[in-house]
Length: 296
Length: 34
Image (cartoon, rainbow over all chains, first blue to last red):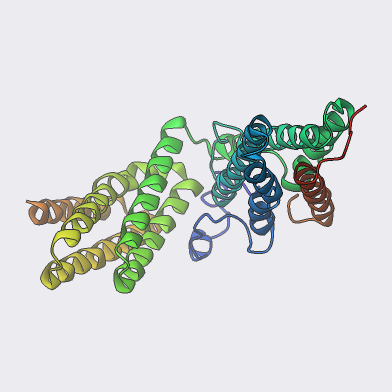
């Protein structure tokens, strides 16, 4: 939780903004390897004996096999929700302005784990309701202690004076960044993946500037809508075309477009830093026209 | 919270509870129950 106060960097005597902007842009990740990530992965593996029991009981005791399978599914669902919850939390932590996830995945994962453990104990020790209940409560407490709860409160919204409109714009831009990265990754082309990664880093740098000062959104919005949407559409079309025909010329044009976009985002970031509104508007218009000509 | 040693202990407890419960399904307690 490192929300920065709005106005601090722009107030007289505040710290210089370029120093903050020089920090490397961070992509949301699911924690450090070996930390919650590894422990969350173990949640998929630990219930394996239940699956073995279910498969073993299939012929002899079908009702028990069905209940064991249901128990296994509940624990797998809990493990999946936990993984998604940790991802959402990492994305929340990576941003300076963010709203809490709409669905409390980690809490639901803890409840489902408790349910799954209770059911498993009940299957192993038939009608021992006390043991089943106590095991479930212990699992619930241990799960919440081990992985924590979902972020519940908005972060940086009041401090930065960011409206829902700003948060929504950042959310959309983040979603586009994720989609472009996913599409580029599906091409399995190391150069394209690298170039797209560099472009997305520039985009995140601009996003961070907007998070630091939501007033910048007025100037940066077209970058996130026109350019980023253009990059998403172009990437989607290129992925679709690439599947049908492997055209080196098309690949070259796509790479050139990525390079142009990266340069324009880098310039946009610099312009935001220098607070030169007029130049940015003119450049946006020029580049917009150029993108329009290219897509025509 | 997830990086502290208490969370590791909690995770070990959780892993043990899940593993024991799972193994009890695989090897049920004969005549178990209150």
